[in-house]
Every structure is written in C-alpha cells, then in structure tokens.
Amino acid sequence: MGWLTAGEGYEVALVAGKVAVRATTGRSAGKQLKSLPKALKDHPEVDRLRRFAEWLDRHATACLAQVDTWMVSSLPVPTALLTRVWPDEAWQVALRDLVVVGDDPDEPGFLRDATDAGELRIVTLDGETVRISPETVTLPHPVLLPDLEELREFAAELGVIQKVEQIHRATWAKPNGLAEKATEIQDFAGGKFSSRFGLAGRATSLGYRVAGGYATSRIRDVGRTVEASVWIGEPYWDGEMETGALNWHDVDGRSLRLCEVGPVAWSEGIRMASALYAGRQIEEGTDA
Image (cartoon, rainbow, N blue to C red; front, side, top):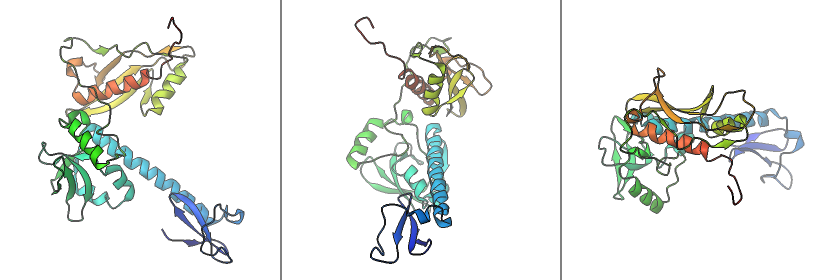
C-alpha cells in the first residue's frame, strides 16, 4: 500500500501492520516520523488505516485457524483452492513449508509455492524441488506421517519455520493392549487448580472449548468426527478443582471405547489432557 495524503504536510501508510506517518514539507520532508502527530490522531485516513490493520489481523488469524483445521483433520484440500489463495500473503504465511501429500502417499514434501498453472512446488526428502498437480492434497496430522523424524531433521537443515504447528506438534501413539471395554484415561486426572475458573481459563487460552463441566476438542478422524473431553468441574463451583478423566464420544454423544478411538483423535485428546494437567498446582517442599 502506498502513502496517502493526510492533512496538510503529512502522508500516512501501513508499515509492518501499523500506521506510519511521514512529513511532506519542511526539513523533515520524506522522512518517517517516530510518532503520530496530535493533529492526525483523529484524521479519517488514519482511522481508516487502523481499521484496515485490524481487519488484516483478523484475516491472518482466520487463515491460520483454517489451515490448522485442515491439518488436524487431514482433510483433502483442492489444489485449485491453494493456488487461488496463495497470492494472499496471509494465506502464504499459513501454508508455506507445511508438509503436503498428493497422489503418492510415500512422497511427502514441504510446500514452497503454488503457481497460476495449478501446480504446487514442494521440496521432497531427497532434497529435490518437484511440481505436483493432483486434484487434492492433504496436510497430514503428524501422527499419520511415517517419516516424521526424517522430516523434522530435514526441516532443521532447511531452516523451516511453520506458522501452523505440524511436524513439531506433540504427538502420542495409541498403545497396544488396551482393555476391550475401557472408555477413559486417568493419567491426567487429579491435577489440582485453585479454582474452576482458573482451570476453565487455561482451557480456553489453549484454544479448547468449554461446555458445561468439560473442556472439549472436536476432531475429524478416520472419516468421522469425534470429541475428546476432560472433566473440569461444574460451571459455578467456586472452590478448588481437579482435572477429571479423558474420554471420547461421537457426534451423537455415544461414549467410545478406547479401542475405537482413531490415531489422530487419540493424539489430540492426550495433547489436550496433558496441556491442562501441566498447569496444575505443584506442591513444594520435602514432603511434596
């Protein structure tokens, strides 16, 4: 965006997401000022730029949230959609360097570019830049990536920084030998918090939904949607609170046995429960 005239002797523009001003007359002509002059604080152009900057922030946040949803759910995304949104900087920031998989599930690659010709440019584990143009691609959840450790090592060599947490996302593999009728995990139960309000606040700050007495995370896994939930206490309880068990249920509210929970839902459920538990009160002293 270029510089816009604002009042007599000034121009304004968005620079790094903030309103910047420069003088057009006098000894400071052409120089960017360190602060906004009082005469411009309520100027219509300044107000318009502020509102536009706020919209850009909301747009960038929405792009990150959408890409995160695609990744967590491993949803097929049309290649044509990616090439269409790629020119938008907010979408590029959210998508760049994510691991994508096209028609060949054994050849994941880091997304580097999307062209007007409908192609995606990816860097494979062999270090080659290739072009692919499948009808759809997936941005796999890391628990589904068999080459995850190799991808992490190669990403370090390339200096890859993902805005949407994918390859460095904490994952938990579903163990073997689960009891056939078991429906809950107790590993993260009993985490003490000074109040239910503080526990609920931690859940929402981590991006989880609080509904009734539960912190929940909805996940699409193995072609269906399930919800992981952790008990965090009655909404109006004003005393100390402890985290409860972790369990999963389907969209109809039916409790799932642990053996029915898919790999992504398992990993994301454990991720939520462990993150809540990590904020518990820790006793200090020799008798703790």
